[in-house]
Amino acid sequence: MLQLEPHPEGGFYSRTYASDEQISAAVLPARFGANRSISTAIYFLLEGKDYSAFHRIKSDELWHFYAGGGLHIYVIHPDGRGEVLLLGNGLANGYRFQHVVKAGCWFASKPATENSFSLVGCTVAPGFDFDDFEMAKEVELLNLFPQHRQWIKQLCR
Image (cartoon, rainbow, N blue to C red; front, top):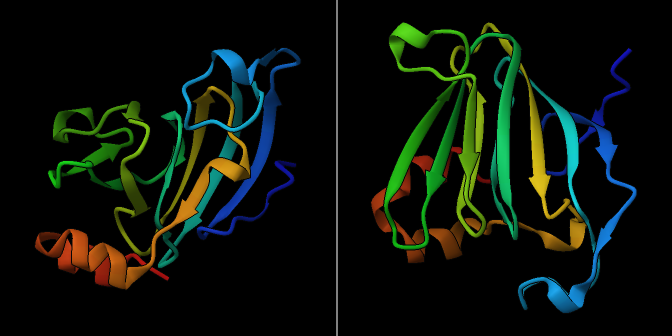
């Protein structure tokens, strides 16, 4: 139905959209080495105790909540500030249907409760390319951000 496959960061995904038009590398910021789709979108599923390990990408990523329980997105900003974004239905409890993770931030996610699942969507512009994806190395993140040791130890592979 959703045609999900394993994602390198954990969980399962299915690309649902990639724009036909491209943005030329000549007009993109220098961090992009080649042309990119204008935008891309995926379904992303985490179940139970599974988690999306710390990683970062070169574009802003807009997260959308679709079904299941809430999702906690752990973000470490380049300046070392940490925050937890609450994605889900519980608006009265601080959850939101959408959140943005800015380009260059390290981030990881997991379902709010281990006996649930979270089906979300991620829209990226300029479009996602695996060349723009970097998995965190636990030792390096701990050296850079020792104040987030608990998150890093729990959410790195």
